[in-house]
Image (tube, helix red, strand yellow):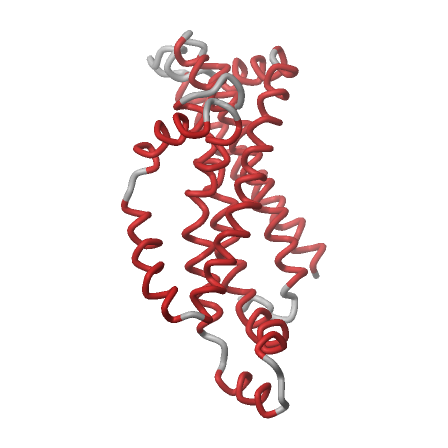
Length: 253
């Protein structure tokens, strides 16, 4: 059954990708100039001819995304735990967490580059800012919505606060945290790319910005194509890991 579902998903993905590429190719047959919309063939040629160049910058962006995700999940998870067990911390930090989402990341990017320089630090900080809120909010919500009967039973059996956290609260909050992690995997590349656009000499964001300035739209689309594939792969890998981790909470059809 699982194998059949996997083949069905792969077939849908191939059909969707083929349809999008066909629509893209048909659009290039119109009067749209090639420097505005390159053909799939020219983008494929750019991928092949610049394989080493694109591979180097892809690894830079991937390292920024993974570092930002790791740090953002740790910081967001720690804050969610702190707000769960400390009402005082919750009253002080929740307004700050919510208001942080009202500030456009583009407005913060130049400041982060000034503070952390043109290296990897500013891009990782941008990725952390983008994924911090979904991880914190979903994990905090999951920790607060543990069935009271579970906690009452744990207290009746004499479980300590640490045992309640490890055996009751965290397992019950994992599905909610999984939703936040999936959102983080989808939006983390945004933070890294914005940081590279503002100030960088490496990464796919730099490649796109540099190619756009030189009217190399095929190379720009090639970098964008790699970014999309990387984001999809990251999401799919994380989704598969989460399905195994919380197999006791299956999704309903």
